[in-house]
Amino acid sequence: MPRSNEDGYTLAEALAALLIIGLAVGGLVEGARLIGRMQAPTVGAVRETRDLRQAEAAVAALLARRPGNDRTLRGDPKGFTFDCGGVCSLEVRDEAGGTTLLVRNQTATRRYALPAGPGANLLYDTRNGRYDRWPLETQDVSLRGVALVAPTAEGEVALLAAHSWIEHPKTCAFDMVSKTCRTTAQ
Image (cartoon, rainbow, N blue to C red; front, side):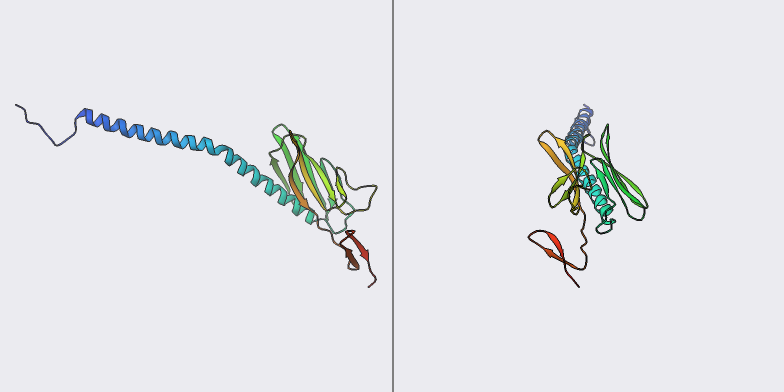
């Protein structure tokens, strides 16, 4: 009678162990793949938000270069330019993949790909309303900001908004009711 050896595993036991390990690893890989697919929309939304925030900061920095009470700003729904010791401009381009924003200042040009489809336009904000052209021929008002809006099924949505700071003369007595500056003698 042959002696049984208890020192090792049989072939069947080794194959069963490999099968169990393989199934466990396969389950982990498939679980990680499923989590990755579920996170893809979130990662895309975070990336779009970051890109919009960077573009908004660039537009705000561009408007900050504008001298106080500057009258050289000229704009339409697809962009604006003004004199900042050179030419500063913003351009909205409709492209096949979406909307591209070009921000130019004296030293550099930056390009921002935005998540909106074609049709995004600039609006110029004053205390009296929002307009698609600047300057206004009918009123003498100050530019308070610029917004980039895009059409959606529900209407228009603002992608970004940047404020333009208004500098008043030293002789200004600002009236909070009428939101105007009354000049006083010094």
